[in-house]
Structures are given as structure tokens and as C-alpha cells.
Image: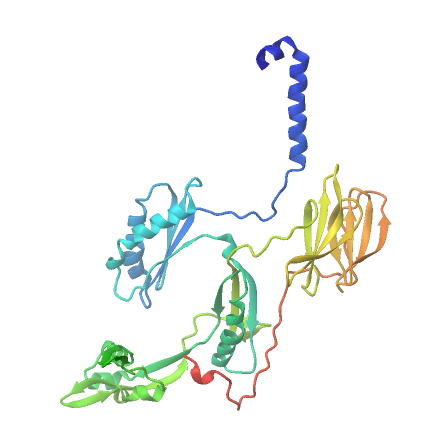
Amino acid sequence: MRLSDLCIRRPVFATMLIVSLVVLGLASYRDLGLDAFPRVEFPTITVTTTLEGATPEEVESQITKPIEEVVNTINGIDELRSTTKEGISQVFVTFVLEKPVEVAANEVRDKVATILDQFPPGTNPPVIEKLDPDATPILAIVVSGPRSAREITEIADKRIKRQIETVNGVGSLTFVGDRKREIQIQLDADKLAAYSLAVEQVKQAVQQQNAEIPGGRITKGQREEGLRTLGRIDRAEDFNRLIVADLKGAPVRVADVGRAVDGIEEPRTLSRLNGENAVAKVDVASRTLVDKVEVGTGPIQVFVTPDSATLLVANQGTETNPSRTVSIIDTASFSVVDTVETGAGAHGVVIEPSGRHAYITNIYENSVTVLDVEERRVVANVGTAARPNGISFLAAAPIRPPAFEIEIDMPEHEEEMPGMENME
């Protein structure tokens, strides 16, 4: 006997079978797990190409349009748009949701590679990236002090940036407002005209003579040694002796048409701290999900203590299966260090401005639990007349995301800072 015949002959059985399936579905839906921060990949690819010193019109005609024309032949494109600025071309390719991101990125990369030889001389290789929400900056560190902009930038690079790069989960670090060392050749237009020289000639002469190239190898018996030409210039004043041209048998040097200056690069970005110009701002972007911490049932809210050392996670659970815990997480190790028993259905957490006590609203028990954060114990459990929806402090400042202040012991101005002699 088939199920269809049984349901026709016994309608009550068929009705109860359907009702049981509906009840099972509703019960499963209530306990369905939710991810507050799911990992989402948008099928959007960005092609960034730079050509220093080029005008927006030149970049658009020689870089942006060729990229758009070749990328437009890819199947599954939903939107194609571009932005062109001075020296920078950005092409945004958005695909339909059904298109795998990895496949889309490979197709864009293959298409762009076919027109690389058509770009103007001096164009940097295009950077093809996927739109990753996890790549947005999650931390900003501003460094300032009573030193020159160049020295502070060197300190931020060697003492902060390089240490942070070794932390697991850090994807990239970028500087804003930095001032790096730069050897500048300042030319005199009148002297150039007197020697009938162009700026491009001086540029090519400096590039050719300030280089280290392989010198081959020497074989003697069973020994073989490699050679290289030591053509890199170590001191800024040595650039003045470079020969840029030969005029009637007499060499024309850099000092004859200008001078070399050991300075800093041209400011293109700005960072400020407390209304004053800051030197370096490091934006830290996350590469991937650092870790997942197992907490109680139904975590609904997360609060950080004012010292940024502890996270309090309210585990609400469900009305049929309420949770009675608050998980305490150490932000340094990303691990649950303790679990405190509260009332039924911990719904929200409010922390005192001092950070000593936390107040947890329990919506399934009509009570408020007072928690000592430092001792990790319940001080009191106060009943309420109705379901508590929230707690607020008069004149209490809102809890903000973690803020970091870094103090670096700097030598006095007259002392030489370690590592300055090796700056490049």
C-alpha cells in the first residue's frame, strides 16, 4: 500500500502528518542559528592603474578606455564604471551574483594582460583586486612628536608598522600623512638653457649612473666569483658630481645646472591629531577572520569595557530555551576567560563609565543583574516590574570602539636616532 492510498483512506492520519511537519519546521526555525557578521563576497573587481604626472584626459584616453573596451567583452557583467583622476585610473567591474568571484577576477586579469603593451611608457602594472568588506580599515594609529616629519615617519615605519605586520590576521598597513626621505635634483632653468639641455636628459643621466648592474663572473680554477658594479650613490652631495652631458669636450655635471638636496617627498596626504598636523597615520586592514570564539546560546549583544581589554557577550537564547550566562572574552587572546550566571535571557549590557560594573537586562525573568567586571562575579540581581528593555546612565558618555594611544621614548634632537643612517 502506497502512502497516497493510505492518506486517501485515512484523512485524519494525513492531516496529523502535515501538522507534525509544520510544527517541526516552526520549532527548527526558532532555534535556527544566525551569524551577526557573515562573510560576504561581492562579485566586484577593481582595476587600478597609475601613470605619474599624467593629466586626467591623457589617463582616460590611453588607459581607462582601452581597459573598459577589453573588459566589456566578458560575460556576466552587470555594471561597468570608471573613475579617472590625475595619474590614476580606476575601473570597477560588477558581475551578476551568480558569477564566482575567483572566476571573474581571473577573467578580468587575463583580458587586461592582453593590452599591457598599449599603455604609455612609465605606466605602472595594473592592480586587480576583489571587493572585500574585510579589507576595510579596522584600526587607526596616529603618531606625532617633537621631531621632524621625516624622523617620525621612520619611527612609525620601523617601530610600529613592521611589528603590526607580523600579527596574525593583519592584511595590509597604509600610511597617511607620511613624509619619506627623497633625494631631489633641483634644476636651474636658465642654466639648462645656457647648456642647451632638457630636464629629460638630466633625468636619464641620473637613472643610468645611479644603478647597480651585474658585472658577470670570474672563474679561476675550481673557484667562481660573481661581480657587480657598485653604482649606487650613498650620499646626496655625490649626485652633484654626476655627468649629465658632454659639451665641446668638457663634462657638464649636475652641479653646473642645479643642486642635489637630501629632503622629503612632496606632501600629497595630510593627517591631524587633536587639531594639529600629525606625521603618520597607520590604517590597519584585516586580511581574514581572525578567530571564532564559542560563547553561550544566542549571543545578541557585545560590549567592550572602557580599557578595551574585555568583551562582554550577552547570551539571550530563546524564550523556550533561555540562556542564563554572559561570556567574558579577553581581547588579547580572543578566548572566553569566564562565564557568569545571570537571569534568564540576557538581552543587553550597559557598562558604567568607570568600567567597574556592568548591568545586564534579563527579558525572560524581568530582572537586572549587576556584574563586577574586575572580579567577574554577580553583585546583585534586582527584579523589575516588567520586562526591562534597556538601561541608561545620566550624563554618561556613550561607549566607543577601542582607542589606542602609543607612547614612544624618543631621543633628544641633538642625538642621532638609531637607524637614521640607513634610511632610504
